[in-house]
Image 1: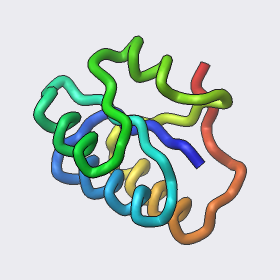
Image 2: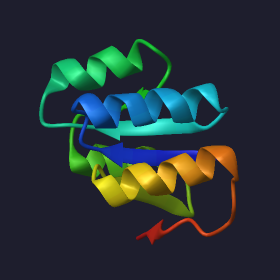
Image 3: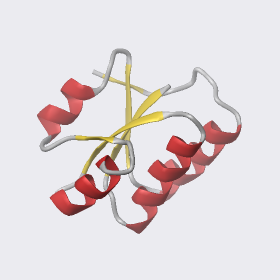
Length: 89
């Protein structure tokens, strides 16, 4: 499953790492290019802009901002993948 993450602070980076370890492919974006490059070097697909981010996500698209709700949701997805992913158009 491919997921997108916007916001790569301490929490966002760790969410992406956990998702990648669980076998998910992630497209990542942050205003700080160093954060994007760090995760791209670890296997995630980095995006240089929001438009680039959307283009790199395969359809149907699933993405979310880095929030506490997102952390809880991603933890549930890693442990129990389900088709209840929020589509982004």
